[in-house]
Image (cartoon, rainbow, N blue to C red):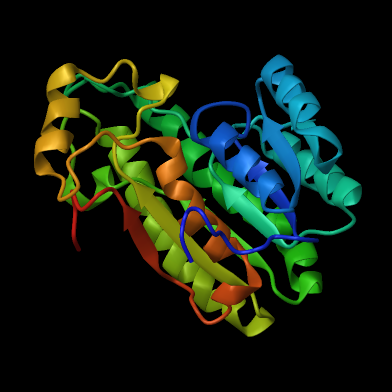
Length: 252
């Protein structure tokens, strides 16, 4: 398998959160190109609807606020109904909010906001998706973590803690859902060049460039092959794993 020869996702039904921009948009395009039908869930209605229009009949937009438990439940149900079931859930939606602040400067409100979206949201989305994933017979949950939780990025504590929690949840979920034939894994990207990382200081970007075994900027498309493989039937004996996709910046 390579980025130029990804596994087929034909007839696979996938719900992707945070789908309207950044990594989510790249994932949406890759999934549709590989043959999947994709429910694009996001809080950004205009961008989500526009992307669905561009992607055509294989994609549809569904409003979902990952900080709102009721919105998550309703969004998952509506997406599964449109798809006619669910084979894969990608917990991609996340917020940063705490970037550039020391642990002393971090507010309780910001901490709680980040945890609500980045930790509670994936848990609730997975619970809502569970009946459909069980019925699939080859259900997949893919959590989008971050290598910041593997090396302990400073001045980003709420986000780092939330992604560390997501990695731990991946392992626990894998144990719980394995008997139902559902594989649960995570991808931990490095600092990727997307609009959401524009605020990151140039020194941090340079730190990644200097520290990678493959010394170039990371772009969203670098993650597509791993994403497609871990959502495909081919990954049926892989679960509870965290895969860093970061050019060798972190090698756990």
